[in-house]
Length: 305
Image (tube, rainbow, N blue to C red; front, side, top):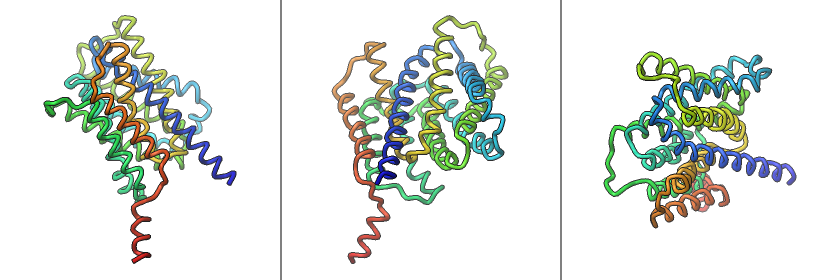
């Protein structure tokens, strides 16, 4: 009994930590959108992730110097998905609206259970699937406009969603076998150095001549959104499932909407309020309802029959 209570406590702490990460990333939608008006996308990503990697390496130097081959392998694999996800999201944000970007990115919630099943052969639980579908529907209420147009930016952001779904799934797969801090540092460093190199080679207009607002956005992204958030995510996923993580972290879109209202004075439409309610319902169903798997239901039906 005490062991079950301890597991539940750790799971609740992990879920709360992931919710904090979603809040920080939601705020960054507003900050990043402002920054991209004066900073090229690859330079922004390169500086954000490179600075974040250096900070993480300094704080966790003792662990990093003892990184195993498995730590490096996991970091490079997960880091590839992180890098591709942020590249497609950031470049896509130049050609689409923040609300569409938030919705399409959030669609990784629906992808995760099926990707996870293909890799781990662990079938998603019924409440997790229902929660993910509800969350996806709520994000649609919040973000999709009446035109339903699919442009280049939307396509890139859909690719981003696939990458983030793969990142969440592979993080859960590796994090229980490797040092999560080392894995986080390696994936952040890969993203930072690769995008910085791309910026130097292919962004002729890129420079370090930013104003205070630009550097503020980079430092906010590096310290809180990258170093802090990635460490928390990798540790927290030791104590929760990939579907749990995906559903909780998709509330990033809700926080992005709230901060848009606060800082941009965006008017809150009735359907937006409805979307907030549906997403919250999806999270609560995932978190609070009994964890009954579809396979278990099938087994029970076979027994009864």
